[in-house]
Image (cartoon, rainbow, N blue to C red; front, side, top):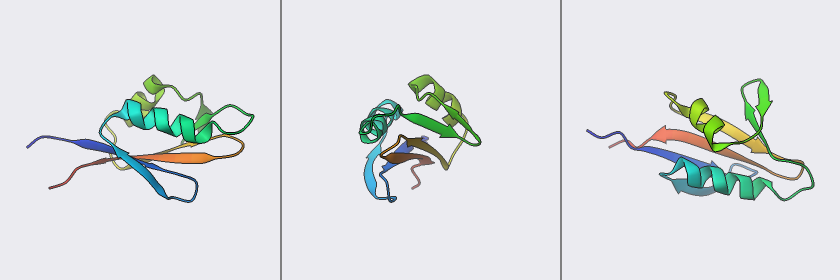
Length: 87
């Protein structure tokens, strides 16, 4: 049985924006959704806040399942959920 991970991207009010098999595409679209204001985009990881990079996101998701990561700026926010495709 193969393991297929999917990344669900949700907009502001938990409205589904898209489902991706690529972490890079999900990250790109999350940045686009949040990059509407005058401030920078940040990635919230547990208690801390870091700069959103694809490497940081991969390291957070490595070995984890059913985890939510929030991107936000002053005007918008988005959430990426990593889960496994189940048969």
